[in-house]
Length: 152
Image 1 (cartoon, rainbow, N blue to C red):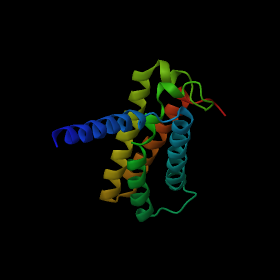
Image 2 (cartoon, rainbow, N blue to C red; image 1 turned 180 degrees about the horizontal axis):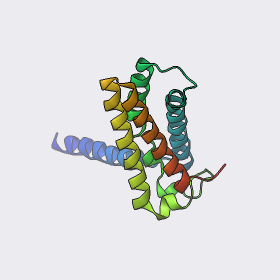
Image 3 (tube, helix red, strand yellow; image 1 turned 60 degrees about the horizontal axis):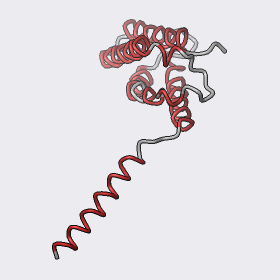
């Protein structure tokens, strides 16, 4: 009985260790596609907010609150997709993403802070502060694109 239990435990341990080492090894191409998908969604939910800021889309408090919430979640997602293993995968990421990790992290934090401020402004519901916060999110996006994304 003890030998059978030992064998079962050994098989389970080896199987679990194999699964744990194999799971996190995502292909670099997949990481790039995932981060690009998140960035596309960020653009989708930021677009109407930018339109409201410019006055080309009617201001809608409910859309602001919904989109700000989506952006808050999305702003946390793409960063692990900028793994060093993706350096040689064709994308719009500049080499600075990988060589200036601290600066890149600061840009991520700036975006997340600006979005958190947008979420807070949306809860208050005053159009002026919301539009200011939308502008700040846009500046944070633009700063990252300026320093870390290939010009189109």
